[in-house]
Length: 442
Image 1 (cartoon, rainbow, N blue to C red):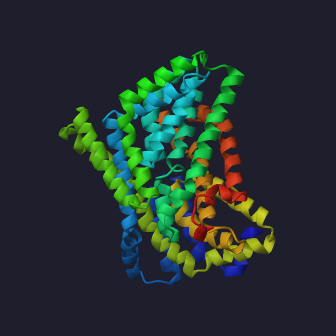
Image 2 (image 1 turned 90 degrees about the horizontal axis):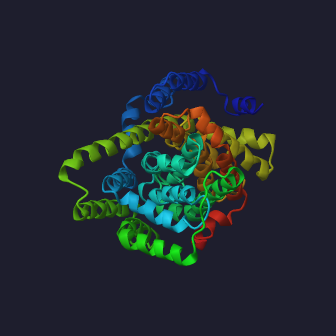
Image 3 (image 1 turned 135 degrees about the horizontal axis):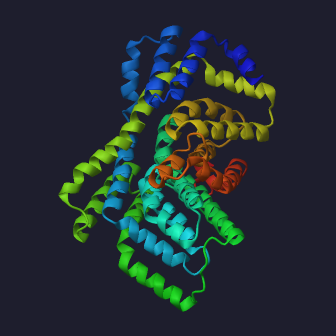
């Protein structure tokens, strides 16, 4: 019914349907997302005749010609350097010292270190790989079933795009013309809420199934362990401190904060003797591979977004949906369902560049704050990282451990449910994402 209403509103023809079918087919055949998007965009423009093909080349370059995007490879490189210098292990030591007083302490420490890593790298896949290699074997030794240990790491790593600085917020800010620094500030409370929900879920699961025992430590012993861990690893927190202080104080742009973090992390690696010049080629190649997945998607999504806009699809979608119901509560729920479904079958970057321009007019139509909309969208898409069939974090931890993706996904269900509760709170309770913002954005 919705599709028929949309078709009648904008008079869609084969110049729309064929590229969409082609895109879905290419994705099903495991063609790279950027190639599928680019092919669909070219076919749509050729069939519709709305723009000359000569405009595609210009659109490709203007789509990525943004200073804010420079922050993406910088944060990716910072995360890579962090792992190679061994600083990420210092985060784990401090996280374990913080939680060792309670039963399920190492599981909680695993989630905390995921959040700490997220506050630097901005990438969920990098966090899942780095934290998974450090913790999954120890989680199993502590009594957790291997599939659950994998699910715990995969869920915790979802904070990679939810806790600022986040690559996803840089991209949606670029697509919708919103300051990344503003989105980082708005995402702070929701990101922490997601982290707390994962922590709470693990505590409950541990209470129900007694995966991990312990937690009989006295207060004095706990303070001693924490003090020792901080004494031996305090310097690791210089990097996230620089990022957070620089961005949230307004002294540094996200790009400048990323560049500063890279330099500081490298200098610390040399001082500690854990980084050598011979490590640089491998680090740069690794970071370039990750960045090489993101930027082509953004570039090829620009002409597709232009074609959809010219054909009136975003406006037609708003008209069609509001024709079914004008209840804001139901419309928000519909957007969440669309985002979660999209997050299950496609990565965050293409979802942002394709869906944000389509759903944003609907959010505006019901009076939803644009910052709140962005936070809701990224958080809802984040659920897709641990949801089949294409949950990226599931594939990452499966690749590390050899564990079945379906077994990991089954153990991730409790985390999905609690994350969905946070998504609903963000969607229906604006102060969660606007409390820290200046009045001009509320």
